[in-house]
Length: 211
Image 1 (tube, one colour):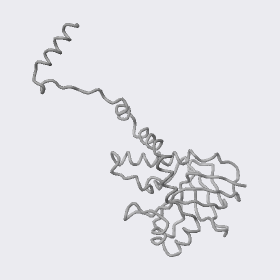
Image 2 (cartoon, one colour):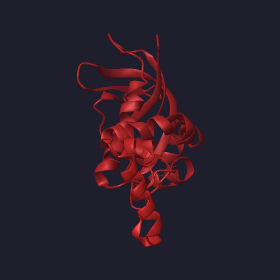
Image 3 (cartoon, one colour):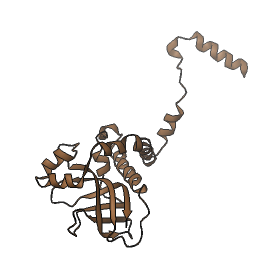
Image 4 (cartoon, helix red, strand yellow):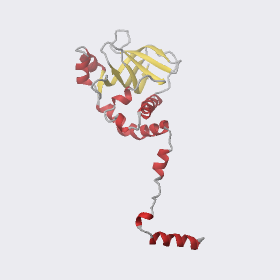
């Protein structure tokens, strides 16, 4: 066997270079990534970028409820230009919000849990917070200025990224139970608007309930 191996090596050395194909050893990390599902690959992307890029982007582009609501009185376009982001020219305006409001209604008994907050003291809901685990929309993905569809393999993978970001955001929220009506909630989150008449439905990235 050893002699046969040496003979093969000598024959390869004697042949023209084009006749001997040298195959490099595969990169273990590339092999592992290729074998991952879309869900696992996008979850890994979120793990890598959450603290390094996602949260800093939210911090750098955040607005406050008073600033947002004052700008919105002039219309969505002026509010977006002053306080928001619009990665797509034909898409919604996105707002990274930091605010504090009083719970006027909360549904914690479904998989699409949510709470509605009064932000200006008039007793009516001004914004809804989606608490998951089921979250509607992809506002968190679509608002990030460094994320582009062309950076991902296809529409399916891009959709899985939106789900992975929502999952990470809601996983960071505290456990909530009981009747929260009347409680004060401080939060940071993101939402998109196509019209100034819409009630914002935000995906919170942090949340604190105060008595």
